[in-house]
Image (cartoon, rainbow, N blue to C red; front, side, top):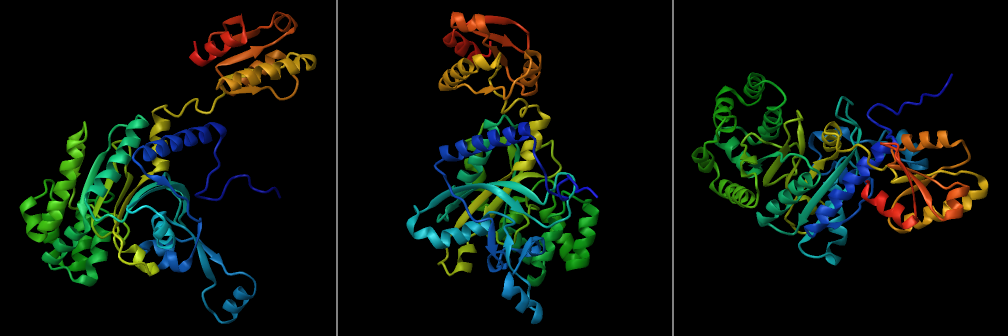
Amino acid sequence: MSIATTPPSGFRDFLPAQVAARHDAIETISRVYRSFGFQRVATSAVEDSSVLLGKGGGENDKLIFKILKRGEALDRAIAEKKDLSDLGLRFDLTLPLARYYSKYGSSLPHPFKAFNIGPVWRAERAQKGRYREFTQCDVDIIGSDSWGAEVEVITAICAVFSSLGVDHPTVLLNDRALIYAVLDRAGVPADKRIPACVILDKLDKVERAKVLEDLSAEVGVGPAQALEKIMMAETPDLNALASASCEAVTRLQSILGALKAGSKRPDRFVLAPSLMRGFDYYTGPVFEFRHPSLSGSLGGGGRYDNLTENFGTPHTPACGGSIGFERLMLILEEAGKADGLGAPDAVMTIFSDELRSRALEVAAALRGKGLSVDVFPGAAKLKQQFKYADQKKAGYALVIGPDEAARGVVQVKALASGEEQAMTVEEACARIAARA
């Protein structure tokens, strides 16, 4: 019986061109985040269960990939019928960041502007567009309670989309304080808040009538109808919202005003009273990025002012956002913006073993000028080496035969047109760099 070559469900392998496209996108994201003054951090992929199961897990508690205890600890847990796991893979980057800041905050700038890019894991059912292992690109500000922090985070993420040539997404904004105030005003009991939010969070995934039906079953017909009128209206009623929480509405208007003033697409920033966001660690403004080519969000985030308290750290305000990297790559791939990334500028062929040293010398000189040059590994006929260059999606194939070596030149073949020309190394460098 042969061993399967397909990765487990929800996990993926990536071909070289895909890896190159992902790497290029991550480099752009990192560059943009750094341009806003954010510093890159890295956190452990594995966390203690207490970190992952503390406040903030919510429905995601069941999604943790748990790691068994080891050796005698596992044997003892089995014998005593106790929890067999003490560690787990992180399911997001925010909880690990709160732990990270609680440990190192005294040696970091205050407020601290951080970004983190890395894989996370969720033990949920795999389906199209949803994976068990995926990359998140988070940007956070810890230590500021100003609504200006939300503006900075959202603006930085929008700048990433712009730098990658992605159409400006619609940015939906709401506030957890406003949500809870509206729930209270509608007569929803405190112990029904989270269930009601979970139902409302499905508004963009299921029919409106189904959401209303589930709300009625959970909190009662009267409260459900009140929530429908205020939170599910096509045009937000600012007076009704302000009567529930004037402070939250004022904060949202300040954020929206600043975002619109600094954007060429002010129409893309929208107040959305039904926006929930899934994690229950959010305490204030929440936001989500929507793109017309996607059924779900392209990213999102919000304010989480209480997370560091889980680790014995004093109350520390914080907010952050994350880009849905897998969905971002889907947009780039469908638009053809991920094609050809990672391809070498040129492939240096090997005419013969006797001329290999000269070929290596020229390849090194071209690399020294900043070009990527792939030297053909091994020996083969030139026809096969040209095929290799095509497979690598290189722009040019370079040949140094006895005549070229004697004259101190290199034959440069443009693979797209088939045009060939003998050039000096300096001329070849300029031609390849210009992609002419």
